Amino acid sequence: MAQTQRTTPDFMMEYFQRQLQQLEGRLIKCEQDVQHFSQRMYEMSKEIHGQTSKSNVLKSEVKGHIDTLAMRLDRVERDVEYLQNKIPDTAQVDIEDSLLEIQMKEAKLKKTSVIPKGKDCSSELMGIKSLKIVKKAGDANGSWMKDPTKGSAKIYFFSGTRNSTILAYTSLKSFTEANSTKKTEVIHLPFPWHGTGHIVYNGFVYYHNADTNNEILKVHLSNRTVADRLLLPGAGRIPAYSLSPHTLLDLAVDEMGLWSIHADPDFGGNLVITKLDHSSLAVEHTWDTNCNSRDAEAAFIICGTLYVVYNSHYGGRSSIQCLFDIHDTIDAESIPVLFFPKRYTSHSGLHFHPKDKQLYAWDDGYQTIYKLDIKKI
Picture 1 (cartoon, rainbow, N blue to C red):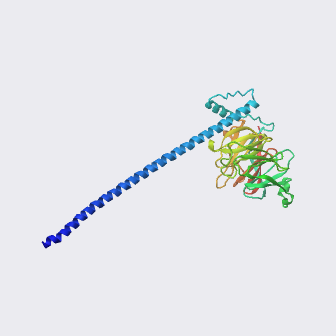
Picture 2: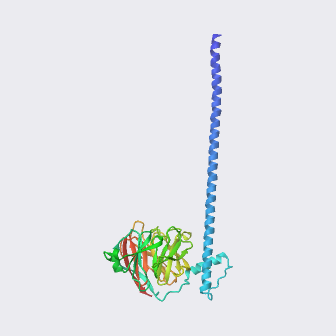
Picture 3: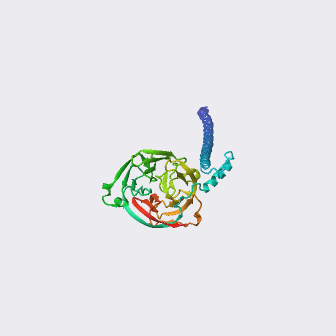
C-alpha cells in the first residue's frame, strides 16, 4: 500500500509531462506555421513591390517616349515651317503624312543643309600648327576671346564657371602687359553666366543664363541691358561635354554666324548644333550629329562644320576625333585624328576666330592661342 502511494505521484507527474510535451509540440508547430506564413507574406509583399517597380519603370519609359515623340514632332513642325518660308518652290512637305514618313523626311533634312555656305567658306581644317601660351590668369576653368566683328581688337576675359563680371582689354598686347589691370574695363552683366560657353559677337555677349537649364541671353556690352533671350528646346539636360560638366550650352561663331551646341540624352548623348539668328536669337535650323559627348571636352565650328575635341578623364593629349559637316562636303571617314601640339592639355573653353583663323583656348588657367592649318578647297 505504501509502495502504491509512492508511485501514484510519479504516475501523475509522467502524465503531466506527456501533456506538457504534447502542448510544447503543438506550440512549436504553431510557431513554425506562423513563421512559414510570415515568410510567405514577405515573399508576396516583395513580389508585389517588384511588380509595382516594374510598372513604374514601364510608366516612366512610356512617358519618356511620349515626351521624345512630342519634342521630335515640335522639331519637325519648325523645320517644315522654315522650309516653307525659305524655299517654298523646292520643298513640298505634306503635313498629313504618317509619322513614319515624317521621321524619314526629318532624317533626310538633317543630312542636307538648308543654310548656304558663306563666300569665305572655301577651306578645310587640316591640323593645328602651333600653340602660344599668352598668359596665366583667373580660375582653372574659364574662357577668353576676341570679338570677330571687323575692326574689333578687344579681348574679353571670363574667369570661372559662374560669374557676372567680364574684364575687357583694348588689345591682346594690353592683356599680356604686366600692369594690364590698370587698363581693364570692368563689365557687370545683369545676370550671371553658367559654364564657359559664352561668345562675344558684334558688340553683344551671348551666354547661358545661370540658374536656368536652357536660357540664352543676348546682352549689349555698351549699356549692359538684355537685348533678347531664347529658351532653346531640348537643351540643358546634360552637359554638352562629359569632361566639362559645368557647360550645358556652348555658343560658337564662325564665318556663317552664331551657333549653339548641346548634348541630347534622347539621342544617346550625341551633340546637337543649332544655327541661330544673331539679331533676333531665332532658331534657323537644328542638326542631330553623329558626334557623342562622352569623353569630349570642347568643340568649335568652322564654315558649318563641327569639330569635337576629346581627351581622357586623367588628362592627356587633346585630339579632334569627330566632325559633322552640315553641307555634307567633307568625308568625315577620310579625315585622320587631329592632335593638339601640347602633350598634356585640358580645355574648358575653345573659341574659333573666323578672321584670325585661330583658336582661343583656356587650358587649366592658361590662356592659349592655337594657330590652325587651313587649306583652300
